[in-house]
Amino acid sequence: MTTTTAARAGRPRVVEAAFLLLLALIAVDVVTWALGMFVIAPTGLDEMRAAAGPEAGLRQAAVSGAFTAVIAAVGVVLAVLIRRGRNWARLVLVGIAALVVLLDLATITMDGPPWAGMTAFTAISTIAPALLALAALILLFLPTANPYFRRSA
Image (tube, rainbow, N blue to C red; front, top):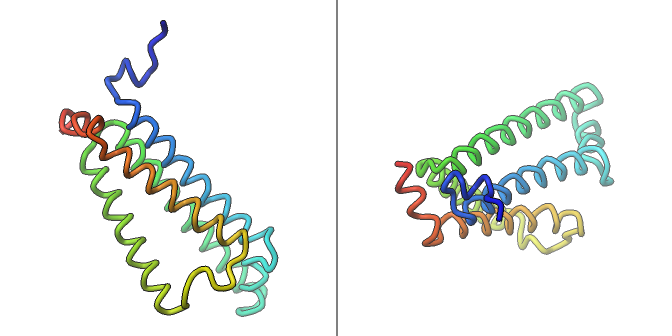
């Protein structure tokens, strides 16, 4: 019977699964940004160009892409640190999740219910990341994961 890298490292399977879910979350966010910006009509780039002009629209798209890349890089670093058993990184993830929930609640109160006028793309790009993040958080706080984070502290 072969041993996995996680087993040799003393890492619980739930932590490894949470790590993979976090990477999937980052990938989904990057892909949905690209689809929304360049593929799904009306594209974000078209809307930016219409609102601000061709050059300013391109600048806004570039800034949006750079911001998305930075957030993705920070997410990968955070996922790696969580995989290595850093409890503070796990707590930072909880803080980020709480902030996202609060911002989503603020958006709901300003824009109305999120399901009003929601397209399939919007539903997938909203619900899939939320489910991935929730699943990762649940796995990271299961009783089988807690000793791994206490040991690393």
